[in-house]
Image (cartoon, rainbow, N blue to C red; front, side, top):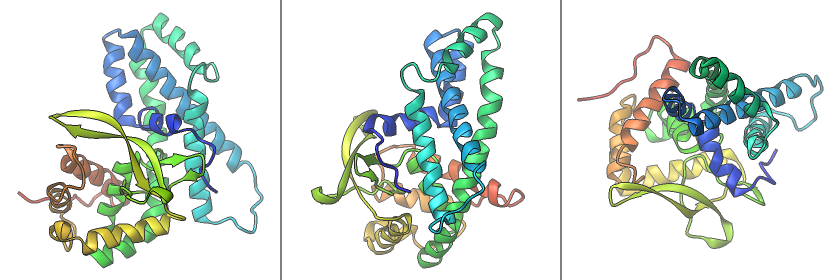
Length: 282
């Protein structure tokens, strides 16, 4: 199922409306009685609610087509997540406005916004992990890197699968934010780059792939053959060594990229093996 007919604006917004670290920042603003932060928290909650509603509707259909598979269901879930973001924009379905009015009256904004968001976030993360695990295991063997690290890298680049670059032709299936220099087979999307010590929103071209598997294969080729990423190969369970090698090789301009990747990998590891601590050095 392709992620088509979604605007660039909707894809860009997915990072904020379905990113639960972003919700935590909004909760902080709501505690400070910031009306704008409260409205954004309510809008994000509406997006999460809409996504859960769409998922319930999908689950209620017992039939399976001939082309149904775990991969097509994964694509359908990503489509629903981005559709939920689109539906929550503007006036939305009205839930956000009602929530704002109720929370302003009761003063219970943080507690009301946090609990449903955390539950939905854990479910979405688990689904993302399970969908990518087989491909990540194969890629990990080729690169000498733990599969959890590769899944974490994809999660960091796409907001757990909710913000893949897309245009009118559909999703790019670009899991790792790999840029493109081929104008005929690229997707233009907004991204955050750091210049002069600060973040800037810019439009860049990202590679387009036919499938998620193609995206993973190209990622293996990039990390496995580029000399600047040689230190990332063979790092095994040491996600910090992998992350620092990527950052030093210029994979991203964010000065905190390695730290964010380590934190995301810890979340992935916790979901897969709750009692296995993540390995770092230093």
